[in-house]
Length: 395
Image 1 (cartoon, rainbow, N blue to C red):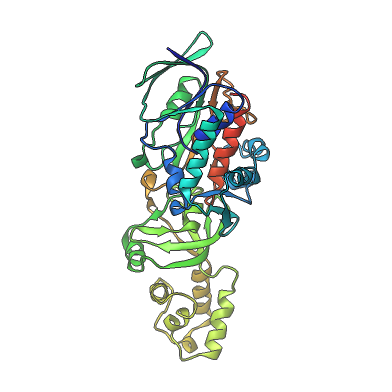
Image 2: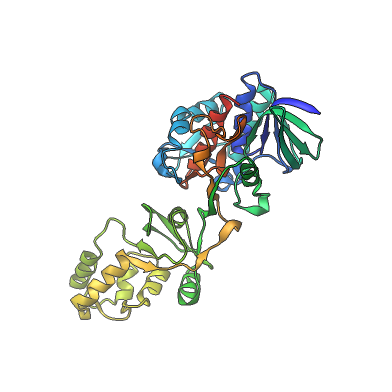
């Protein structure tokens, strides 16, 4: 039986990073994954450009049943710490928007950084290896694999969540957690587009590809001022992905199509200056033509009416629609396109400093499988780095 100090399950961002830092302490480390290639989620991040962190990282940008849990790890490994590591590997980056940092050399370079760090530290990566039964025996973890049995002093689980199953996502982390007495906070797709049926589906599909800046609000969550994208299935874009993490089925969402502007004043001014113009034409001055036409056909929106003919009550209704357009999605696109998993391993059973299990010494859970879910824009990668670094201090 192969004997090592630390066995890490999962060769994603968290697993590779934790493996490198653990091996750097002089520990014998083996990282296992069933995939053919490591870090597939890193590979597709940011359309292949890898949004590897966010300068505005703060625990308030993460969802968890215990919102204070991420504080310790995030404070001890910051975005600038990873930037320093990037610089050591002669990689450069740029800020796109809202603190999002992207690698100039794209995602492949970040993956290579992780692999080089692991190799340099003396850790080993083994791919296309399936995990079988896991037992605790004689103060060690006995793990059966397709490449033979392994005995490890410490076991770090970094196998991710349920998002994007076509990339090999499984519930292995949750199965292991339950085996050792951990509770699981109900999982759900997060950072995922919304879907619709009926008239709204037809309206949104008719202007598929149109994108506009909005302020999006879920019933139980913060608002986000980012872009909304109309699709053949419904609504996507950063604004929609952000509020999807806070959305519950059957709840309405609210869209402000003119963030920071006074819609009532805008319509009143247009009425005074261009009274012969129709509402449809007036809206086309502020929105793409296809969106203006679609909006003008919504309930309470007299699109073909001249502005001069609008009553104060109608102007109020138009302004209300533009500033607080409310509707209820039928659902989301689900795990197929969800970027991350909300919910996961209950943090009450983990040390916030080391990510070690409170039920089983030597067992650690890091990354997406834990009930810590970041906003869109590099936050989830920063959680991977921070939680991985926390476990590596002692694993």
